[in-house]
Amino acid sequence: MKNSAAPEPADQIRLKNDLIAESGLIETTRGRHAIHCLTVIGTIEGHTLAPDNQKTTKYEHVIPLLVDIQEDPTIEGLLVILNTVGGDVEAGLALAELIAGVSKPSATLVLGGGHSIGIPLAVSARHSFIVPTATMTVHPVRHSGMVLGVPQTLRYFEQMQERIVGFVAGHSAISAKRFTQLMHNTGELVMDMGTVLNGQQAVEEGLIDSLGGLDDALHYLYKEIESGRGQKASHKNS
Image (tube, rainbow, N blue to C red; front, side, top):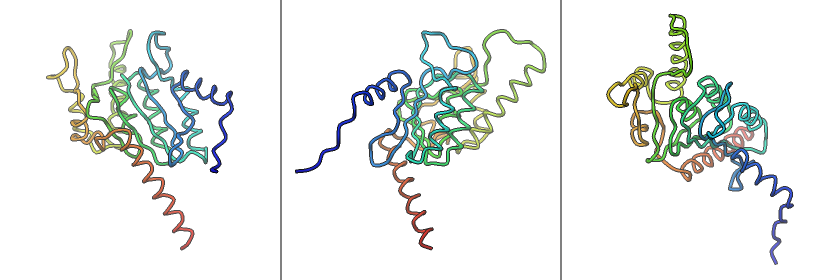
């Protein structure tokens, strides 16, 4: 008679369900390797609170989570799933820098949309995937609310845009020049500048690494984890 695994305590199951319901997070997957799934959904909320009727990803919650993923020896890889309209520029860029700094195998998967400041997040992992039906909107930095119409304000926007362009070009196959051209396209969006790319176009432009879905992203992570283990073993034996 085979020994079956002991069932989880009810309070532990309840805690996991509450975690998923409140933050969309799971601790780790139960597949071949321990992969942490991080979701970036809706608006990326930064220093200012978003309206109550909006789905948000709060960056002050994600920052310590990413630190824990890096530090926890039981977590072997990170999968970031995105369906975001964008949001706070500095918060989104900060999260992208943290994801890029995770030393464990990491992958991003764009579902639905990876717009605006969601683009740096989409390219921040070691490998990025996008489904064919997803879209990505590339546009210049915007600001809501009142701003001072002085040269210093314009220069601030330029510097912020340069930071975004530099990050995207540094973490994908698209050049800074081409990404800027897509940003300043005036022939596609009504009453705005920018470009909307579908999944196939995003890959063709070099913005995203591969066209694929959940299985492709997990297969990539498994391969990277197992390759890393093999390298460690051969290094010890040498």
